[in-house]
Amino acid sequence: MPASVKNSPMSKESLLPPLAAHVLTHGLGQASLRPLARAAGTSDRMLLYHFGSKETLIAELLGFVARTYSQALDAALGSERAATRGQALARILTHARSPQMQPFMALWWEIVAGAARGLTGFAPAAHAITAELLGWLEGQMPADDPDPKGGARYLLTLIEGTLMLAAVGHEDTARDGLLASGLAPA
Image 1 (spheres, helix red, strand yellow):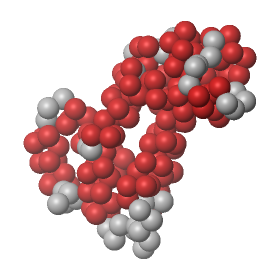
Image 2 (spheres, rainbow, N blue to C red):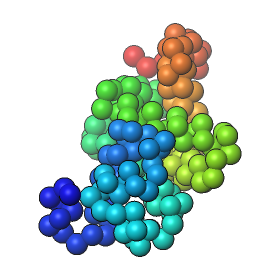
Image 3 (cartoon, rainbow, N blue to C red):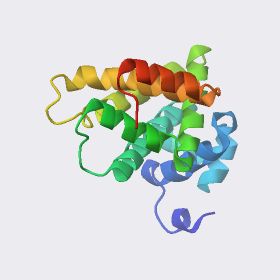
């Protein structure tokens, strides 16, 4: 059992970090109760005690991962807002492509695929994560942006498309599309 779990009272808040580390390393395919419990240094019964059901555990875990991703972006980008939407796009794409963000991206594509297949719980998780990212993106819009809500949606569309194309080996297609949009990152 990890020392941090052994020395503090167990709660949802103390369980979520090791659970997140597990799914970021192993994906959701290894997100059955026993491997998750092992990763958190507890039993599957204790996970159910704290979360109520596996579905609730996964939903809260994925929400935690989304918040962690947003916090990592905040830390990497600093508190200074971009001057333009294009600058915001470039900063976010640069960080999203970094090696430390790849586990988040791999997990995100797994969630998207599960939602597309209609797997239980995946569509609500994808919806919640997207809502979290949209809220975060609104805060990244330039201070003088006339439509931060619309701008966030526009950038999310460009970001998701760019990262998906890169994931399947079409970086050039993504770059050419961004050039056509007039927001090509430097």
